[in-house]
Image 1 (spheres, helix red, strand yellow):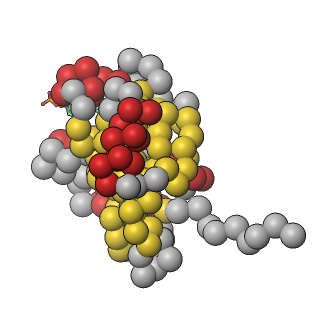
Image 2 (cartoon, rainbow, N blue to C red; image 1 turned 90 degrees about the horizontal axis):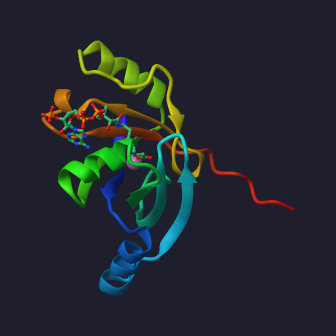
Length: 146
Ligand code: CMX
Ligand code: CO
């Protein structure tokens, strides 16, 4: 079951400048940043709020690491802006299977690795009224180290 907005993915040409815009304008700070080579992105997660199921909602700022990546191609065509939305679920495998049965193209056979060790998959935007849609199961919370 999809229970929350996990994040909104925003494509940008210059990650550092875009992070600075969100900091200076709204006061949002970077909660986490990483490079995901498989997805071809350098990204920053800005944590907006916690949610009642223990998750959180983020803005995901995305700069392409290569022109032929999903974000690189999209930016070349559209310029900067909202690239995708992501719903949070405790069971990305089950929800992806259910949605595939409804005739929506799920892009991956098995979920792949997303931000902060999450497991992610995508639904084709042409089957979702023009919205690239991601499903996310967050990584389990690790117990603190001794
Ligand atoms: N939102 C809405 N429509 C989109 C889109 C987007 N983000 N990206 C592509 N499209 C549309 C295009 O406009 C195009 O439409 P037309 O045929 O009407 O012109 C069509 O989809 C095909 O687009 P394309 O430019 O030829 O791109 P591809 O088919 O090669 O790739 C997609 C599209 C969705 C399969 C690819 O972007 C993908 O695999 N996305 C999932 C992975 C991803 O986005 N990773 C980055 C984020 C990582 C993260 O969130 O952690
Ligand atoms: Co995303």
